[in-house]
Length: 183
Image (cartoon, rainbow, N blue to C red):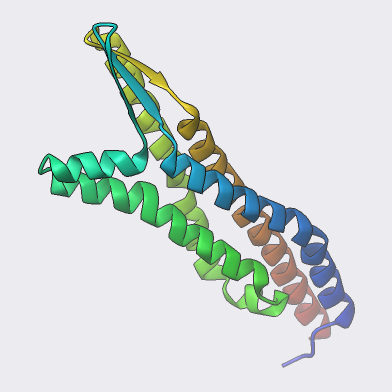
């Protein structure tokens, strides 16, 4: 097996190292945004101008459990709370790995990037729910700050994964080109 070109490794390390600060900022922003997006109210429902309820993702899960809607509560918890937290923790793990280890984890990174594309569907479903409730005439639904923080967390995570993924692909291509030249 031919030895890797040190210049290629330095370029790969520099490319990822040059973005480490931005990646760290994105991870911190995603952590804060996700915590706020899950705990702050996401929707305000007003019925007959007098009765108002505000719900966060956490209170929605609690209300669904209290009302006996266990399947729906578990589904909301898994896909809107637990999965984003797991993806964020994995992004944190990837950001601390050396460049060579990232190149070895290319397939897992690609799978997680694919999964991350579905994160925006939570935001879309929430928006459609608010639209439906507004158009039904029974409730006046208003989106609150939690929606914006949750959306920001999803965007920061997508940015983080794409930065790591692009740099890792470039490094893998450079290694492949160096291997071909050595042959």
